[in-house]
Length: 221
Length: 247
Ligand SMILES: Nc1ncnc2c1ncn2[C@@H]1O[C@H](COP(=O)(O)OP(=O)(O)OP(=O)(O)O)[C@@H](O)[C@H]1O
Ligand SMILES: [Mg+2]
Image (spheres, rainbow over the protein chains, first blue to last red):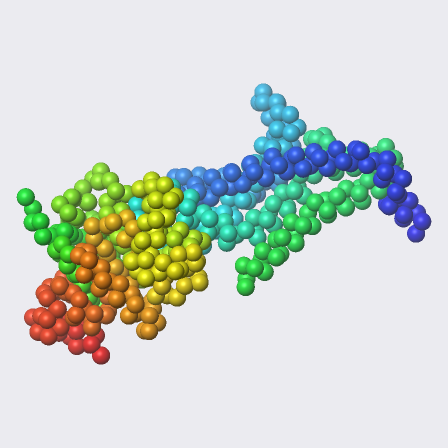
C-alpha cells in the first residue's frame, strides 16, 4: 500500500513537477485552441461540399473523408512530421500537429455536420428560397443553425475526443501535458506525474462530458 | 401590349421528374385581384404547378409570365422574381429557431437589405394584419397550427408580393383551426390580392373563388367559375371528382 502511494500519489514529487506540468497543460490548451476551431471550420467546408449539388465535388469530398477517417491519426502525424521533410517541407512540431489534426478532424466534424444538414427537411429550404434568399443565405441563416443544434451533442463528444488526442503531439516532442508528465516521470523515476496528468485531463474534460450528456437529455425530451 | 388583366399567365407548361412527366402542357391565367382555385386528385401535379411558378422546379417546356415578365427565360433573376411571388406551404415551414417576428424579418433584412428597426416595423404590421401582433416574440413551437400558418402568410406578405400562391394551406390543420386561416385569406382577397390556391376546401372555393381549375394527371380538365364547376360541370371527369369530393 505504501509503495503504491509513493509510486503513484507522491505529493512531494507532484509538487516538484508542478511548474513543468502547468506549462504542459498550457501547451495542451493552446493546442486545443488551435486544432478545435481549425477542425470545425474544415468540417463546415466538408459538410457543405458533401451536400453540394455538383457530383464531382461530392465524390471528391467523400473520397478524402474516407481516407482521413481510415488513416490512424498517429500514422498521419508521423507521416507529416517525418515524411514531408523528404519532400522539402519542414514543419515545426506545432504546425505538423495542427496540419494532421486539421485533416483528420475536418473529416470527423464534417460527417457530423453533414448528418445535421441532412436532418433538416426540404420544406425549410423551399420556404427560404421562396422569399428570395440565395442558396448560401439559406444555408447560413436557416439550415446550419438548426443543423448544428441537432448535432450539438455529437460535436461536443467529438471535441472531447480531439482534446484527448492532442496527447499524440508528444511523439513529435511537442511539450504538451502528457509529454511533460513523461519527462517528469523519467527524471524522478516515479509515476506520480502521470497520475497528475490524468487528473488534469479529468479536470479539463469533466465539465465538457457533463455538458454533452445534459445536452443529450435536453434534445431527447 | 399584353393582357393587363392576367397577372399570371402560363402556357404549354411541362415538367418531368426524371422520366415521368407530371405536367403535360398546361395553360392557365390568373387575373389581377382574383382568386384562382385549383382542385384535383392527389398526385395530379397541383403542388408541382405552384412550385414551377416561382421556379422551385425547373419546367422542361412552356412559358410563365408574371405581370408581363417571362420568369422562365434563361438568365431570369430568380431571387428578384421569387420575392414578388409569395408562397404558403401545407406544412407552414416556419423557421423553428426564430420567433414569429424573426421569421417575417429574415428576408426583409437579408434580401431587401432593410435595417433591423425597419424590418421590425414591417414585421409587426404584417403580424397585426393576420391578427398575431400579440404573438410576435413567440417561437413556432409555442403557436397553434392555425397561428403558425398565419405567421407564414405574414412572412410572405411582408415582401409585398404581386401574387400569393397557397399549397393546401389548411390541410395540416385541425378542423377547428381551418376557419381562422380561411378568414385571413378572404381578407386578403378583399384587399385586392391576386391569389392562386390549391385546396380541398370546396365550400370556401364556392364562396370565395373567382375561377376554379380542375386538374387531373398533369392536364387541365375544366376551368370555369365556381357555379359551373360545382353545379354544372361540363366534363364527366369533373362531375365525378366533385361528386366524390363533396361528401
Ligand atoms: N420531387 C419529386 N421527385 C419525383 N417525383 C415527384 C416529386 N414531387 C412530386 N412527384 C410526383 O409528381 C406527381 C405530382 O406530384 P404533386 O405533388 O405535384 O401532386 P399534387 O397534386 O400536389 O398531390 P397532393 O394532392 O397529394 O399534394 C406525383 O406522382 C408525385 O409522386
Ligand atoms: Mg400537393
